[in-house]
Length: 227
Ligand code: C5P
Image 1: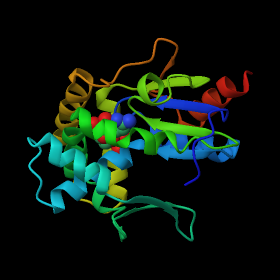
Image 2: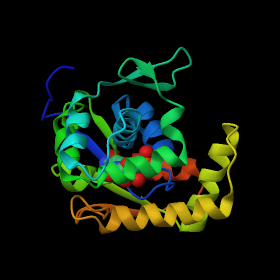
Image 3: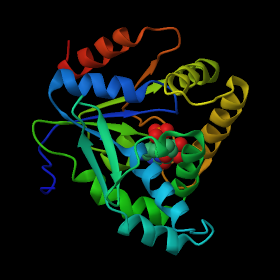
């Protein structure tokens, strides 16, 4: 990848899991013709690679070495969908399970892992612009982003959305255990010492509870376009 272009505009979209960041980021990036960084996929890929390598997450140095050594690529499929390739193997579906999400959240709490992924994330900043989706895009990775949005929704609604997404993929899921997992992941993401989940001081907080996704996309686009 070419080096980062610090003059390229960045839209940081942060928020808890299931707030609609993925769908909104994708739609906004497409509308603007900007690149997209799915930072959660990076943590998921590292959690997955660490699992395959049998790394004990209490060994922070080994987890960080794994983060630095894992090759993660995003490739557009023939249908335009982004595939996540981990060390040469398509892991798109494997990293999307709730178990992979929990592994990502655990490995993401290790400061040396976050440090190991920092430059890789910043290198996504390229002209004509970048939509960066994550938990700490506006606070840590791109603190100078020109646009910052913090998307949120009630835990109930987020669990319901995740349920539909996973069901549509043919995965066996249970709504109440999904809600418990989402709450546990939120609590861990918000209470960790490094890069905890919180809105940047200059972020616009958008509560998407009960709001159709196209309306959220329109609102975010109008923020970027200054309308
Ligand atoms: O967004 P997604 O659900 O794919 O993220 C998976 C996990 O990765 C999150 O629960 C969070 O712990 C971690 N993550 C993070 N920082 C980011 C993106 C994701 O800590 N910027």
